[in-house]
Image (cartoon, rainbow, N blue to C red; front, side, top):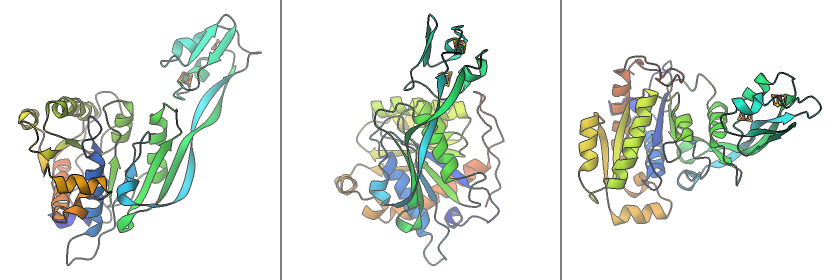
Length: 328
Ligand code: SF4
Ligand code: SF4
């Protein structure tokens, strides 16, 4: 079964796995990078499979390049549409400010102000303006970069400009730019999500087939895992857990996983050699190559889990999550 993980049929849709954690510092990127390298290696004695795609969606602090060392040759600006108000046409009716959920536009008397740093570029104010006083102007908020990484892995990342608070449009554009629909047939796409459980994580995970949650067995890890599991439930996605630094804490994470029906797919022990290697930019599979077949087996397990799920829609009204995919 493990062999199937990296050599799926040419007509199968891509398998998108988002790697997330409720907080930073859990080893999420180490896991995501190791997963990618393990799949790129393929099974010993078999022809090498097409390498997986890797997207670093942590646009506020991307660091997967430290592990996968990509040669980034393609670039494109991240553009966010910001409203511009024509004062000559504006009547000061206030409808734009009323519709804006992000308090990015305010009307003071007959003067309408736009706070571009708060604007999500949703376009609602333009739609509701009765005077046609609002036009949208593109503003560069970051850059998308792509190239090949170690193992021939197609790698892409987004980098927000310093001080830009809006990560979600950058992640949305990164996903569309790097993996245009319908995506590479039969390939595995790994998305390294931002830490936390807020909108950027949801944007990274949206449309994925599986959420791989990386945590550590401590009360803090448990707290954040609970929140991350809620994101998976909200999006209607199957999820599994990797316990990193196993052995440092207590059994609370295991008890929660058992109660929530979250499979524990891998345990990575707390070990000085791993910590030292990661600090020097090594992935887990470079430090301990015996983890490579374990990561490939993990993806095979994910395929089994995804294949057993019915088609559902997100309860929040997000785009439907693809389920019930053909088994390889
Ligand atoms: S909705 Fe249009 S006319 Fe009304 S305050 Fe806003 S910009 Fe001015
Ligand atoms: S585009 Fe959306 S977020 Fe930006 S000011 Fe208009 S309504 Fe607010």
